[in-house]
Length: 262
Image (tube, rainbow, N blue to C red; front, side, top):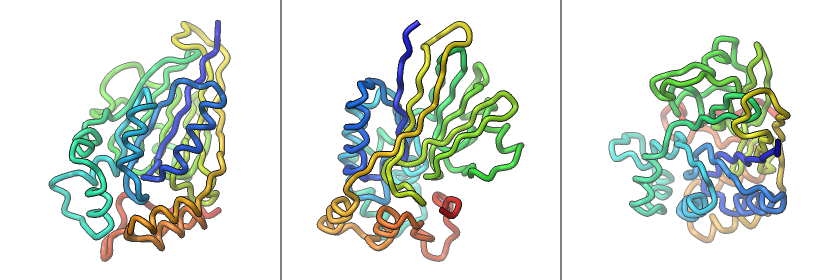
């Protein structure tokens, strides 16, 4: 049976320069199916363009934590950066982002695959690479957020900006890393799944991580020209791969924590 390839991207965070580099690489490989695991906006300067581009090219779009809280009309945490990133978007995009599905389930090479942004329970619960066994098992559970259905044997997610791959207890867990805000190694990264769609039994299957160089200095200059706040933090992340620290003065960061040291 013919193999099919699906590109998984995540955490673009308004970095259109990085997104276009990754999309060009995907196209050069002849891959036609792209699934996006969320966090289109925030941190970078061109969330509006990123949302438009992903609506155009992504077959599947999933809710991320920034997509949920940034346009939230009842959000209480606020600062100059968050106001700028929200207002850079169109109002119709606010509604589209918050209405995105929580997860996407499908079968490939006899494996039941589930994709979501951060965890099986909520987009606001972070599961780091150094999780314990219970956290690992919880990623494969059905929850009110995922709904009922076959429990996955393969789970892919984003959120931490820290790509990794783990196999245990006959289950596979992987993190796609980040296209627009990759930490540690600043090179954008995405994942290619390859297998046989809807295969009734075992078939060849692979998970490949791809890093795509791009012009980060040009992206930073766009942010500067547009007058985006938190420019030093953006430079720290996309140029040096170092997390900017607390985004919200006087609060413990809920939405982004640094990955493991490089």
